[in-house]
Image 1 (cartoon, helix red, strand yellow):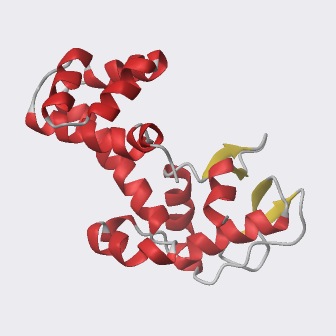
Image 2 (image 1 turned 30 degrees about the vertical axis):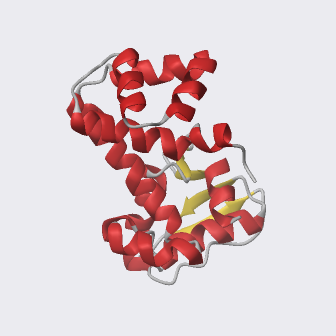
Length: 189
């Protein structure tokens, strides 16, 4: 079992409390956040913040953001977490109910799984004569990505790049290449 300090200083706890604080108050100072935490009886969190200077600095940098910027960033984070949670049986229904707009398609998940299993470091886009849809070839692995819904492959790849699951780069002739990230491997795990 985790000790209370570990639980209190977990990422999701801190982000949730920060979000609640900013929705109730417009304060931009760490001291105001700590006072609010004490009022709400989160002494373990206060203790964790006071004992960790790096955490204190990071929180201060978030607190100085204007309300709109912080809410936008928190919403983006919420969407990413919900997207990942939709692929974990225990949390799938909850995430889908709360954030139906954040679901990775089955094809997007399949692309990531194929990428991870292939052992490749990159996927290169390739045009084949006689076909309208591009093929995606594993580089550093073998074979090609199986695409079940060619109509939506661009949307899926764009979503995976936006969420940082894949990185997009270009070859010397402008050919798109998608690069695997640690997030991709973690998502599949």
